[in-house]
Image 1 (cartoon, rainbow over the protein chains, first blue to last red):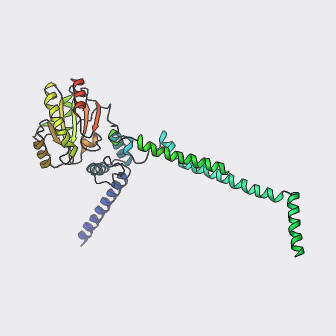
Image 2 (image 1 turned 180 degrees about the vertical axis):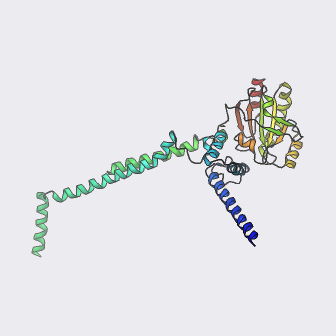
Image 3 (image 1 turned 60 degrees about the vertical axis):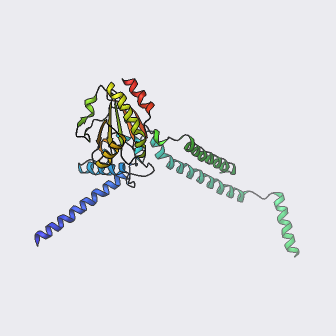
Length: 147
Length: 175
């Protein structure tokens, strides 16, 4: 009975470990471009070369290689384009920072525009009435009073 | 922000989008012309057993120009270039060139049938199950052909069927 429990427990551990491995393979293969059908990731692609790459990732993980080592392995052989996200260095840093930078600039411009508009409204409230405006108000008042 | 500024930004955005579209249509890279990361580097060594049982290593051919062609029996373009490669092999191997064909993601039976059908006689071997050699060379599809000079350096790569002129130009230069 005890032996059965031990065997069962070991078996479930094995499947958990295998699932972890496959999760890692999927995670890493998602970061690589399919060399044949380049609009897809290696994870999504069933092309022969993508299957080879997935198997290679699995083999390297079993050898204890890190994700960085695996991605570097493929980058050395295919070039930087094999990575689906540009590396955060050099000119690519500009691509990573540009969207955030544009959002900050747009927010500043919007804030300044709203601030200027509210100041303009406040300023109009403080300005005295012009002669023409006074005349118009008087005319309207006379009109209502005569009614 | 004034109305004029909004109009200006709108025109700028529109022009940017148009410029990107035009670039994509006329100037974006042809996938066939993606440069190999291996060009200029020493060709990665490999050892294979040919379909007729002979063990060969790339390192044994230093001092000779080598054509390494990745192919598969199910590949249509490989059929187009089969005669061209065989003809080049017949012409240049006696002068010192080496032709190696590596079959990838293929069954032995299908590969042998292809070899027989197209009369290929140069060194032909299967890649391993992981496709290790094709991965080492950064192969993106088949057929893909690597031109290795006498010093073992990859100087060119062709994706798609290799042309006679390209082969002859390289081998005439080297031999």
